[in-house]
Length: 600
Image 1 (cartoon, rainbow, N blue to C red):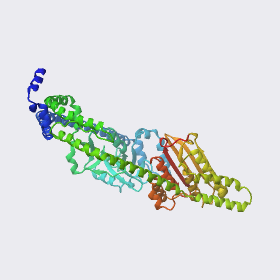
Image 2 (image 1 turned 180 degrees about the horizontal axis):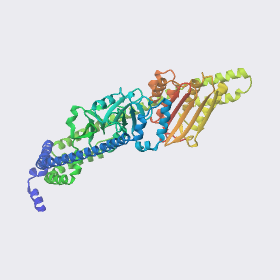
Image 3 (image 1 turned 90 degrees about the vertical axis):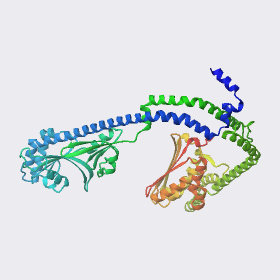
Image 4 (image 1 turned 90 degrees about the horizontal axis):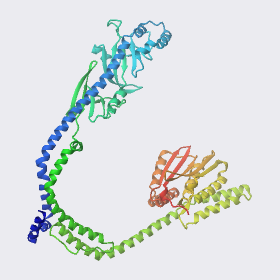
């Protein structure tokens, strides 16, 4: 059969050959034909019916799940409230507790001693247990001193919860409220019960048990229900699994507009209150529907692919064969010349594209030499500009630490009039060689630390016992290279701005270590420190050091060092400043080890 089909097409005139027809057919009509035959007709006939059934099944499943969620919440809350009510019943009927509340006390001391004896009684602990409830009993007894588990009833009469309980006329009441006092702002749910078991309704005593609101709210959140849930007392949201359960926030309101999103609701009676459980419906999740009905959808896909398969074969050949020719032409070309197509086939958009490519290739080949040369020239100018900026940075290294050292030598010589200055001159020579030798901008950390030590020894002559220092470096760090005069710039800043005007002795610590693929350099002083405003400003300047900032600032030493570190590490260096006034400053520099050159 296949051979007969091939023979048939071979006998068809070339202009009527399907492949030639598709080559000359405009791309817009090809896509329209593809859409009508491969997408629109199959989907309208099959998918609309199937998806309607799938959506109905998903909605039914979601409704059943919402009912189960409401039932689970009803059970959880009822169980917690019933446990609290049963505990209040134990207190209500406890003879020893009632006798203690009704007893007469001659003085506060008498009450205090009786209260201590009462707490030692194991019968009280058996009635209360080791619950997480906050239990307070209020007695109409002037001899009771407020505190602990027993309070005088007069202290509660001005409370809103007490007035609402009395107005309810009930013996037991579940009462949610928000306590906003000078000492606390908390959400609370309490079980309030009259304690008239031995007085036949004539006693105003009561017990108030504050539930573990946080635990109740967390249990609902930890259940990780798929749907959003609200538990409301009237229009007050008591609990929710979307963050409305914060203990320190006032209760929020269930707005009328939210009723439109309710998928299932259920009421529950809770000791004089009616709580409503609202399970909110959610938008249909298409991916979830696809996963749940994958087998059916796979069948539909297979059916829908049968019709477009034949047409797609011809269209695919029309597209891909000529697009491959274009791709091959681009692959053969290089930066010096683009390869032209040997032949242009078809009159559709791809045929026009092939012709346009050849026209573009001819024009680009004419211009490529000029553009290429101009680009090389621009790169050379850019490199020259960068070198000029680097030389400008070198020239801006602040030399005033050298002048300070010279002044120290002069003053020490005048005072001592002896040859101790020989050591100082030796260190000064080392510093001067570092400063003037700019054959390379980088130097090993070992050499940089030698320079730091020489500088600090000179400063000890100046500061005397007021300056102490310590240099620590792990051996693995010494081989890495950093921009010249980087560390000494930060050390000089610590001496002059941190310790110079401080009369008390001070320390400077220099540390280098490698951790987690990074080199860390830390300069710490115990000097004056700086306020938070200056700290933030300096931190920002160090992180964003640039030539423009150097031009705008008079003191360029630190910014110069930071900019050279940025340039040497491809902007991967990080700076961290910590400072406290009258305590000192810590500068931490971190650089990825992969960005550092190793001294060989």
